[in-house]
Each structure stands twice: as C-alpha cells, then as structure tokens.
Image 1 (cartoon, rainbow, N blue to C red):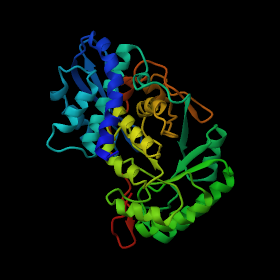
Image 2 (image 1 turned 120 degrees about the vertical axis):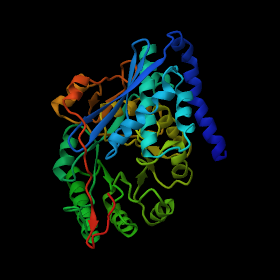
Image 3 (image 1 turned 45 degrees about the horizontal axis):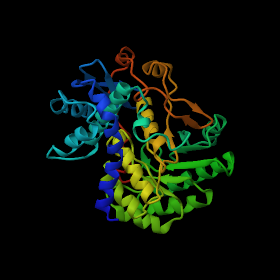
Image 4 (image 1 turned 30 degrees about the vertical axis):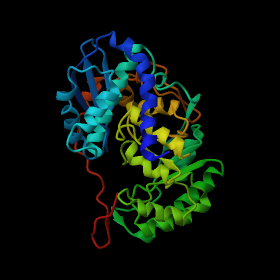
Length: 403
C-alpha cells in the first residue's frame, strides 16, 4: 500500500465510528459560543488549558501546554474563536481540518498545540453530551489497563522509589550537564556511569528509559548509545535533533539500543517517515502538540501498520494524561505511557481531586463521561502565569548547545 493510500484509509476509520454517534449529539443542537484560556504556573512550567463553551451549558476542557511559549499559545487558541463560534462542536474532524488547512501557514509547535487543545475540548463535549468516556467513541478498549513509566531523577534512589511504588519502568535524563556548561566527554561518561548504577540498583527486569532531550551532538549520540547498550535501556529518547532524519538513520545504523522520538513532531505526516523507514522502535507523539485525540489515534494506526510501538509523550497535567489514556486504551500499538504526577496538594484541588487512577504501575481506563476531569478556575487564579526561561546551555567556547 502506498503511503498516501494508507494515510487516507487510516483517517477514515475513526471518522466512521464518530459518524455513528453524531445523530444523537446533533439532537442537542450544540453550538460553540466562546473560547477561553487558563494559564497556570506550576513552578518551572506553565500549563495552558482551553475551555470551549456551548449554548447548552456544556463545556469542554483541553490542554496545549508548550514550554517557553505559553503566552503565545494562549493567543493562538483565542484566534480560532472567529472560525469556531456558531459551529457544531461535534463536527470534530471537519473543524480540525478547517483549523489546520484554512490558514495560509500550516503547522508548527504553536498552531498545532492550539489546535490540539481545542480538539481535546471538543471530544470532552461530545463524550459529556453522550454520557460516555471518550475512548468508547474511538472504537472501545484494546486492553484492560495502560502501562505507565514514571518520570524520575537520575539517581538509583529515585528509580528504587518508583519501583517501590509499583512501577516496573521509569525514565530520566542521564546526559550530565553542570551549571549549563556542556563538556561532551564528561556529559557522556557521567551519564553512562549513572545508568550503570541505576541498572545495578533496580535489577534486570525493571525497564530504564533514557531521555537525551536532543542534547547530544552526532558524535556524542553514537558514543552514548553504543556504551548504553550493555545496560539494556528500554529506549533512548531524542538522541538526535529532529531537523535531519539522516542523522537519525546514521545513529540507527551504529547502535543496537532501542531508539525513540516524536515529542516535537506533529500530525500523522510528521510520523510517516519514522514508521515507514523504521528509524525508531518507539514513536512518542504528544496529544497536546501532535494534533489532539483523533490525530493521536491516527498516528497510532500508522505505528500499528508498520509494527512500530507507541509510547506517548506526556510531562503535562492530568488533562493531558487523560486525553492520552483515552487513545492508549483503544490503540494496539500503544505499549507504554509517560506519566509525570505532580503531588502538590493544590494541584489535586485544581482538578477537583483528579481522575487518573494508578495501581501497580498501570492506569485504569477512564470511566467518567467525556475526558473525565475538569478545572477549578478559582484554584487556577491563585497560580497565574509567570514567564519561565529554560536553561541556556553552552559549550566551553560560549557557543549555544541544544537543550
């Protein structure tokens, strides 16, 4: 099957199941009346939420949190008001196509994150209108629960804590940078030393995920990945930058370590080459950036076709986590989900106590109508947006280093 034929077929499957439920939703005569954004500061990051309002009082919540550009993202979400107001929020595919294709300039991190936040909110409205969890509208469950890996620090103690909590997989960034100074030999050597210590602590059957954060040069990436092989990482994430797939192909030819990437790629088009060329073992689309719930489902179908596994990226809030879980539940290719719980008491209050249920390193399938969670705007107002700067890494000569 040619790539273009496959992408067309993949798009048609979820749309068909949506068409079966739309007559019931249309009977509600739902119309979009407004959009609003809610930005919440959580220390080193800001979460950006989108709320879609309707004429029947039903609202939907979505998330598009993107580091360093949250204020720009908020405006990008609101700019869609003139296109969306007055339209039926259950026409999800039609509205997505309009938001993505009508602008002269398509794609990019800001536009795709804005569309993703709105699209998630539209699914939330549809699920609430029909009284069912979103995953039931995507074809129903493909599994009984969803395996999680937890984001932790790069010490043996942090990994052991995750193991004690019942997880059988965890992730950290082992590449070592001190005081924003990148010394390639030190960064790789210390990263491998940390990995060795973690493997010794957790034993052979605990899966160690590594996030290189795109910090490695090509030479560093080859050395790091080949030296990591003996410690059997579950995957090494973003060992290369996304601009040149040739660099990723080169690394693929040099190492046996499983590779992963995709958090900064968008839509099914951004993942086609990863899958058709088998450049990675795991793709990592982020529901908040890749295009939303239905687009994540399409990306999962692409992965399934080419026997690539999917491990969705998700360092954001409970809204992002639940949006991911609805797709994970229905997608055979999804084998593990990133989970980064924030334990601050006020964060639990922000989500009215929360809805993600985790036991022994697995998440239960969502069981509430729609997305399954909402935001207390009074709590959000106590933690308003604050500008946050990411680290400014440099090499010893003062040149800019990736982060």
